[in-house]
Length: 217
Image (tube, rainbow, N blue to C red; front, side, top):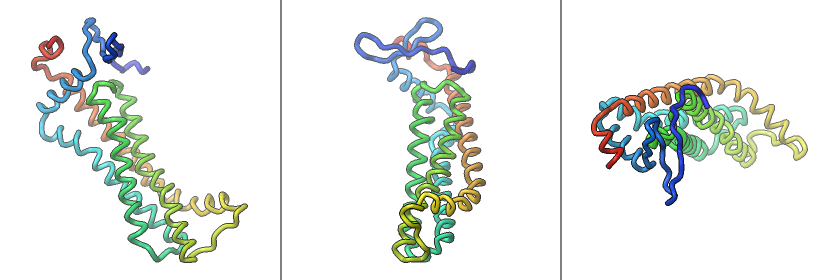
């Protein structure tokens, strides 16, 4: 565990409820922590609330755009001219949905439940979601989509059974090289977004309204 992580311990009570133990020996149930953070979230500025709520949508939008770019590269390599809408729709929608779901599950929700108190871990998660969901996944998805179209319309010679892996690897190398910039930008954007969300999370923790009542209520 990194040195910057908060010293919060999660224990389970006799009735199966998860609780967090603070440095003062107080225990707070997970639902109570989520409720407290949600109340603090409502007291943030509109800019902070919008960035926290809609930030993953922007990252997912970039992932959808990356899917269209990867789709375009593979269409050119395989000389596919048919089925433009058929291939473009899933290449935009699936990376968008996957990236939004991944980021929400690994960064946003853990922050709002008080389970992610490590800034370094938050940045790493954001960067990985950006690279995997918004870069690697679109590349892996675009290959079979356009390979199927190329085989259907005979726009490019297909590999023999014993040479398929080498064929698709060699064909994908120039596409991956062209996607390096997209991978880098997605990683940087994921890192930036997660850092801003963690800063907003720290702002929520510093809000002191009726915390003592929430702890013992």
